[in-house]
Image (cartoon, rainbow, N blue to C red; front, side, top):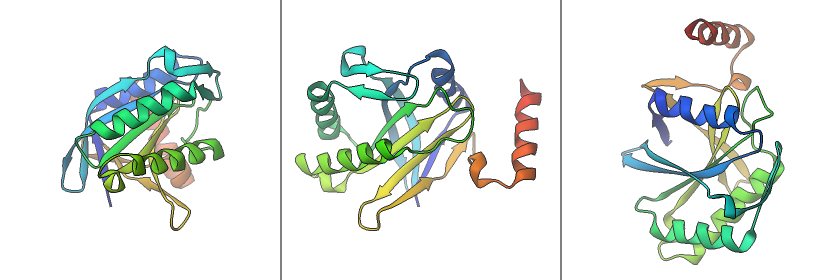
Length: 179
């Protein structure tokens, strides 16, 4: 299983995107690979011209520009992972993929076949809410989502929907005390 690692500052900056912008924002994440660990190296927010329309609950891309950008990014990735992300600014709870998000993830996976050696690229989607981040891959053979473990400064962050009620309360209380 792949593990995603990031510094707390990067985590807070990504969460800040969901708080700063009322509309959804998307982008890509570059990583360094160390065994089964992906270390977040650089975050790039999509330029405004890639969007056709953005709302608080959806992104509609300018398909020509988005497809060209995505294929360009896939072609020029120097790892076997392509990580894209977008925010869900209206959500305060756990980050989940919508049906449209899953469809987009599947579509980007299909685009990997259009680039040399693309069949070795794993596509990952990050969902960012006002309080949490989760990363997912999609197994097209099994038609199943896989949440990837996320570590902040070495500590695993489990989305609240996967925690028990007591653990979610403790984590929320600890987060509130830090602020």
